[in-house]
Length: 619
Image (cartoon, rainbow, N blue to C red; front, side, top):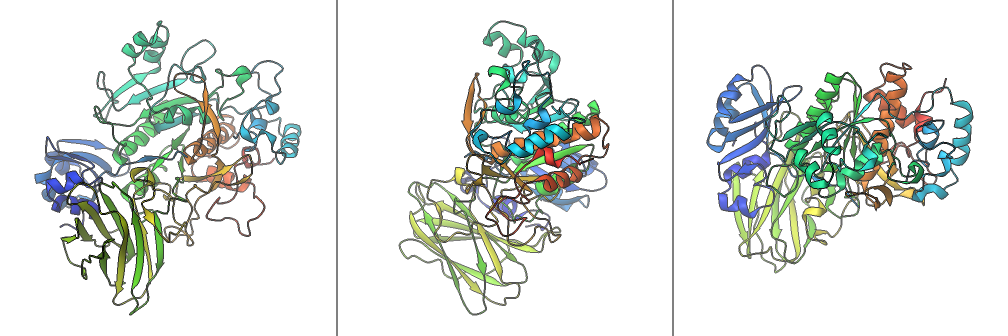
């Protein structure tokens, strides 16, 4: 065990190969055939000692690096003085569960000849929120007083999407002459060509290559030249909301927020693998987009519509810290969805009292093949645990001890790991993996008993994996809906986006929620604001449009709006420093408060709902 290594990786290294294979989480990042691990490092000084040990190294911004290394050399790696901390990858999950007009976007797009002549842009949006009256007066006022700065369409700004790819044939992502609006496409799953300079996976396709493909007749020939597909359609929808030009709809009815922005697209993945994308792929993608924007000398808004629940949710994981670091490079804004864990009952919380045990009940559904549970608490507090299965079999008292503890309860093997606080956090994790001795974990209600010793800070929290990784109904019986934001939306320097229903002007209850206290001890409220995320109309893979729900689809409204603000400020010369936290500040100030809430900002919708026009400084 090394204190430079995160808890989950320490547990994975101590577990047997058979145990890792039975777990959904411990094996992520491990290549069984080569006996190698993909790892995330934070380092300082020279990278050469790391290069000497690793199979390959991808250097990111700000002292972060992704490596592939033989398992037998990880101990040597951790011993290097240049290495500060090591984490393994985690799986990421879609944030899936109208939007321009209620977000005050139509008025900033108005007065443009981009769309069909004579079209009443303000009345042709066609989303579910069109019937709402609360934006009409504001829209008229802005059209009369803000014509000096409108239209804003994202021209001169790059919009980066790290997702499942894009349907590059879709007319929403093509200009009037049929050429592509994609400046570059990095498909991490295709290995027929060269990766971007400085990276070692996938193939980078230029706009010239995409245009050459689009000039050919038929799908087969196009995909022979540029063999990148968006199988799920998630990335295509996200890109369409943020920047689609609506050319696939009559009169641009279903256009996105920044229809003249150029696109930088990253499709995450590993060749031949059909599982969930990883945090390492996301980090590479964000790094690539910001470096490419710097190379092209254009500001960029980056969209992340993925997340997971592993971590202390306080901004201290390497992924969260990396996003904070890279957000200070070049002229960028990073927008992240708050996730869809608000009503999944995957989070529990409470306070410990001396000499009083606490019991938490966890329902496990039929045919659950594996499960992991995180317990986070202050390192100051001393806590033992006990687990009781649905048949009443108990583990006995499990005290804090260095290294892995293996305990069998009924027909389930438990791997338990008490972690240490890390250089970036005072909190301690108790990580528990449930592995069935046969095929499935014993279904029914499990009890996790917390047995206090010396108690000072009192608070504890538990998280399950994201609901999309579990059978429906595997959940805490008495959940806490606060602090259900997914990581990395908990990073302090990103814009965290919740979802609301633009038809009813009400909070979307699935949307991840912030905590009672502020994040990172620095008074950072999360989420920052909310955007439409229920029944959003967006481009579909293969053509046409479909409705989508989730914070995945609320986030690109804000990403596109950030691009419009940067167009106004940087491209049009109104404010050359309008990027990063300044964009966040303007969006917060322009956000509209909905009735029925006693306090703003709050943990559901932050400072209010997106209103792009009111976020642009008044003269």
